[in-house]
Each structure stands twice: as structure tokens, then as C-alpha cells.
Length: 269
Image (cartoon, rainbow, N blue to C red; front, top):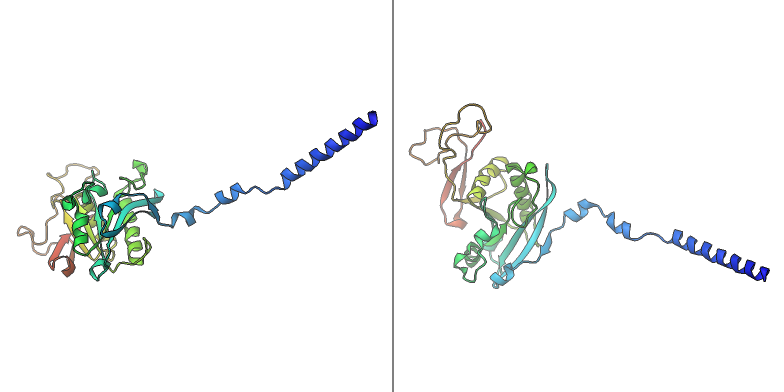
């Protein structure tokens, strides 16, 4: 009987040893997927759920997250809704980049109501233009970084990368020949900064709801507002001094009505 128990113990020990060996030999598969470089994932434009297709059945529309990498913020994304007319023409190769104001998101240009009367996107598509309607960085469905890391330069740098991707066909395919910046309020103010820093990004600007008067009174003493000009006059303002040193954006845009628009660019002294 003692011999029988000894044999059983020996067999049990052998089985346990084999089991342990199996556990040691089996390679862990889950961590291998987790080791995928973040840089690889961050360069892909993702399609995300959106109701934009329902609002514009006669156009080809997508809700997308466009990856960007911004100093102080790091890897982030800009949410936007890209729409193209179904019947592509020369005009549809021009994309209108819609940049909303400070208290708005992309809904400003495309109200979520049944009537297309309240949609700038609908009107642009009706006239043959493509549109890319975005949430600025730190708003809406775009990345929301800590406020301490977000600056005006962060916002313009992110949009600069979006414009580059629009021109090179990295957003749902099909590169655009021309980019028209359509701004509202803060979205218009950002255009001035964008034009000063990235002069070749945009072919034309449509800037609305922005005043040339930056502040109502002269700054007094030292403070963060010392480098902001008291007043920025339009170049065609009759009260503007001749030979003003304020640089300007000048674009002739026959695709957008044939008028020539001259806008000042605010610069630091």
C-alpha cells in the first residue's frame, strides 16, 4: 500500500511540474497589442458617428476626428464634418473651412433642425462648394486639454495641420485645390493670427462678426494687455492714416463672388 501511495505522489508531482512548464512556456499575447506605438495610431483620421449625413442626403458627408500634435498639448484631434457635393465639379475642389466663435461649436454653421434655411453648410453645398465644419481645439467634440495648456497659438497650430491634411487628401481622400477660411467672431480673429504665421495656408478669407476695434480705451500701466494694439483700422477706412505700417491680407477670390477683400493683420510691436 505504501508503494501505491508513493507511485501516486510521484505521478501527481510530475503532472504539476508539466502544468507549471506549460504556464511558463505559453507567450503572453495581450501586451503585444498594447505595445503598438502611439504615433502610428495618432496619424489616422477616424470616421465617427454623426447625424450630418441625415441633414445633407444630397451630399457625401462624414464626421471625422483629425489627429494633430500641438506643442504643450501633445497628441490631440480636431472634430469636423466634411461634406462634398455628390456631383463633383471644379468648384467642389474648393473647401470652405468653417471656424466658429468662442461660445459655439460646429452647430453654428449647420443648425440641427429640419429646415436647411438655418444651415450655412446647406447653402455652400447648394452652390457647389465642399465644406469642412470644425470644432476648434478645446471645444465641442475636439480634444479638451487643460486650460493652462491651451493658447491661441495652440488653436491656430491645430488648424494649420488640418489645412495641410485637406490639401494633401488625408481626410477621407481627395485633395482640395483651394481652402477658404470662413470665420465667425473668435474664428475670424484667429484667421488674422493664422495669416500672419502661415501665409500660404489659405487662399481666401470670409471673416464675420469681428470688429476692428480691439479695446475701448488706451491701456494704462504694465500688464498682459500692453502688447495689444489700441485700434486696428481697415485699410479702406477713410480715417486710416496713409502709409499705415499695419500689414494686411489681400485676396481676390472670383470663386467667392469676385470681390477683393483687404484685411489687417494684428501684429506685436
